[in-house]
Structures are given as C-alpha cells and as structure tokens.
Image 1 (tube, rainbow, N blue to C red):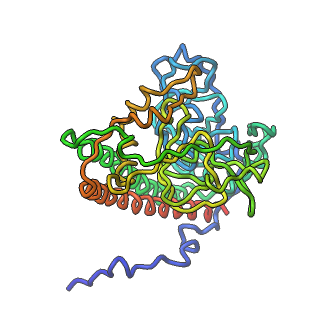
Image 2: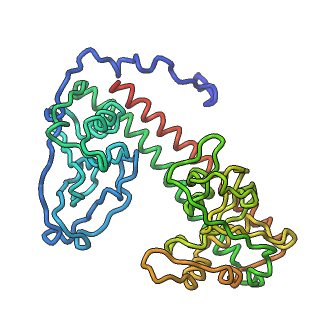
Image 3: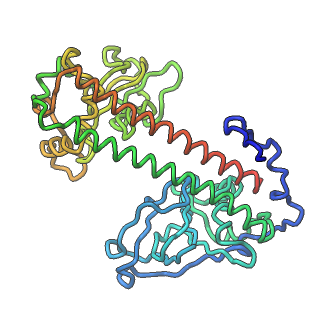
Length: 407
C-alpha cells in the first residue's frame, strides 16, 4: 500500500530551515578574501586574442550570474584582462550595481572589472559566486570603494576583508541548492523570452495581416497634442511639487512615471498637459532606435506634464482600439517606417514630425477584429506577467538563502 502524497498547495516551507544541519556553522572558519581567491591580472592586448569574446561592464546584468551578451575582441582597443572558464568577472567600478557573472568560456573583459579565481582548497568555484553576490560582500565592497564620481574597489583593500566560510563538503551541498534555484530562474527567463517571441510573431502574422486594409494614421487620429518645453532639474518631484516627463518615460516596458524632472519654477506647470490614464504617448525625439516609441499611460499622474519631446495621440474610439494600435506601432514593420522618416544632423538624436506621424501607414481592420486580436495578445502578456512573478519569487528565495548563509 502506498502513502498518498500531499497536494502541492498544502506543502509549507520549514520556518526553521536556517537551523537545519546543512546550515550549521559549527566548523566554519574565517578567511581573508585573498586566502580564498586569486586576483587574476593577466593583461591582454585585443589584437593578440582576436577570436576571443570580449565582455564589457555593460554586458553584465545586475543581480545575474550569467553573461548574456558579449562582443568580439577584434572590435575593442586598449589593454584588457584575460579570464578563463569558471572565473568570476566582477564590476569593481560602481559596485552598487551588483554586476558579477561566472565565465562559461575563456575570453577578455574590461580592465575596470576584477577577475576572481577560486582557490579550490579553501573555496569551491561553484560556491564563490554566491559569496560575492551576498549582501555581506556587496555592502562591504561599496563601503571600501574610493573616488566619488566613479567609485572603484582596489584589490589592496578588498583582499584584507574577512568572511566566514563552511567546510568544502558543506559548500558543495549549499552550492547544489543555490545552483538548482538558479537553474529554475533560467527556465523562467527562457519561458519569458519565448512569450516575447510569440507576441512579436503574433503581431507580425495576425495584426499586420496583409488582408487588412491600410490607412494613413491621420484617418484614425482625432487630435495630436504636443508637450511643452519647461525647465527642470534632474531629480524627482517631491510631495506637492510638479514635474515634467523625460523622453525616457516612454520606456521599453511601457510608461515609467519615475522618469521625470522636478520643475525649477513650479508655476510653469500647465494642467492641460497633465498626464492622465489612457493617454497614448509617442516620442518625437530620441535615438534612431527609440524615436517613435509608444506607450499607454495606465493611471493618472496629475503632478506630471508632457515634455516637448513627447506627443499625445487621441484616436477615434469608433475606429481604433488603443491597445491594438500600441502593438502595431511597436512592431518591427512600423520601426522600418519610423526610422526611414526620422531626421536629424546629429549622430545620436533623431526627430519625427507630426506630419510624419500622420503619414504612417497602418493596418486597420474593423474595431471588433482589433479587440479580438488584442484579447489573444493580452493572454500572452498575462502569461508573461505570471512567469515574471514566479521568477522574481525564485530570485528572492535564492538571495534570501544566500544572505542567511553569510549573515
């Protein structure tokens, strides 16, 4: 006779998990950081390692142990640091950004990084990344950084810092748990990326269906409202103060109200330009890749106003679903139209005019069909949101265990 397993929803975490034998500190020892890692200072000229990958600090994602982007050594100049598979690449400049990752192949990286190699007689290479990702390590790294404009860690100071470490067999068991959680996080991330690919393919194949009639955007727009140029300082508005949106408020994940500046002269605030729920925004000035980015404002922000680089579009509600139009204008096909008409003599910033916006050619099926397509698209977005929540929960658990170990 077999015993029935409890249902998953009835399983509860052990409140005293930190007291389990696995986390017993009885045989732990204190070491200087230089006792557990080697500061690898192998200087490499890119010309001598043209086939190797190059990892810059911008290629490291905050809070992730994985290198997801890299360049070619042949594309960079200046002396770099060499690293091997298994080394930890740590951004010693601006340590508060928590940029650190484990190398999966050999290569070279920015000289503003630190390459840490585990001394396996004291610390396992699989365990070292979690020590360095812990709040204990990161907070101390920030405290000992020098220079105010670009705080940087010096090895001569960091090597003297002391940390308590478990014996190697205990390190191995802890590392197995933490890497298992990390693998789960990666699976969630892969699923999230799959949702993004599905959404893009859905828009390309269904919303941009060649059978749908094409119209100029001006036929669907009832009003175009340009923002106002006002002076602001680059810090957020406080309680009872007014602010003006930055162009970056129309962000990669939608509207970002934190991207604003406090008005220097509070009396410059104009209520008719206040940001309200349902506003459909498009940027008229930005880099070539970002100009013409769109978003829908989810809630009222009565103390924030549109800037002169942001335009609000009002659509004929009997012709257009805003959500459908947001998906269409964010598509790769529309990017081709937007970038083709963007002008500007500078290499960085480009502009599109109101006339450009009116001239955009968009697919516009009947409103009922737009809403059907949007409903399908929203289901994919809801799945992505749920996956993101699960991934954040797993990441929080990983950090919770890590910080408990090194507290």
